[in-house]
Image (tube, rainbow, N blue to C red; front, side):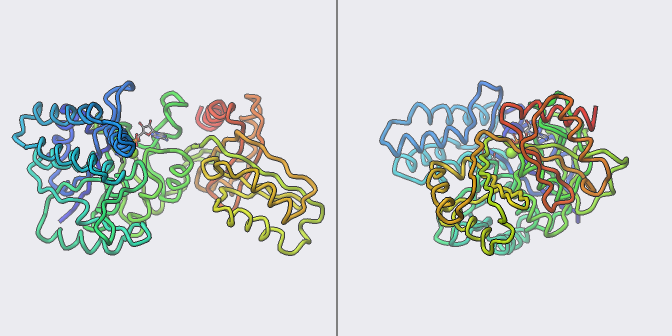
Length: 438
Ligand code: ADP
Ligand code: ASP
Ligand code: MG
């Protein structure tokens, strides 16, 4: 018996028409047994995501601001889908219960999770599949981290009695029984956990693009689809901003060697992207797998003569970050220099305090701060081993007059990371794409 787990993203379930496409896809292959839906997403760029509206209801409730109007937008959206699909499901009772609990002080996680919960109720009814609440099968530990083994046991047990089910994405529960969500975009993780738990042969992740593209389509027009890539390459691309799949979704499926297939709900005949453990080296020398990047980093550059001979320098430097609860992204270093690349979201308002403590602990000759930096990763198998790759990359950037502020090849042989100013971010990605793809 072959088992496919299918996760459908927010745009794939944005309205009744999208639900119909989902049903046709599920009906098209009897192996599609476990279905993981997201909350309804955007129907157009002016639209609101259900999850965002639920967070808003919770924020209002917490400040004792009435949220009836916002909740009504949510309720109308679900009622509209149920009516248009001709279902007899009683969605109003569930909506009333959710509204009541948010008003009574339920947590933000509970509020946000209801988007997927309601999607799941509707989709189960529409497909004629059993509804399994994710709170019964996706478990977090007392520290709030995913408990993969416990989830696997729970899924395994349910599977024996439930050959086909809809399991909402994005949330599970803690040992004390509270609903807890993953971070944003986390339905991808639920899909991977379910695939792992039921021993799927494939994890299909259905979205609104025909696979992972070589670059963000909002930056490069019509980028090529990557047909096959490895979990490691995807991890690098996803972490660096190719947000098509949540970067934490890779671990459960990689552990079991379950291939992931990224597919387009709006173009179901397209083969999409397949992610596997090992892939053949890229066909011709000088090609890459993909490009991804993120904005808003700060670089702290430290210089000190004979730093290399000073025992404990690196430890003292890093302990300043540790004490302040800040983690760093990269640490390119030279003989007398060390730079810390830190995500601005980590840094918050701690920069001045950190600089002060570095001065005190490390007594550097100079300490410079470069804000508004972006990181761009160019990923490809054998990136570091193929002669001329780096030269080609930098020539392409130089031709477009982009100033590369930092280079970090690190120890990863599949990735070269460069730092540019935020203002150059999009142009730099386009320049790299043009150089390697055309
Ligand atoms: P879903 O709601 O189905 O989970 P997401 O919005 O989370 O979908 O992810 C799909 C989106 O990711 C695409 O619509 C696209 O705008 C964006 N994206 C960013 N980088 C890439 C990339 N390299 N390849 C494909 N899509 C990308
Ligand atoms: N609905 C959640 C979000 O918007 C989870 C997801 O879509 O994966 O983040
Ligand atoms: Mg997503």
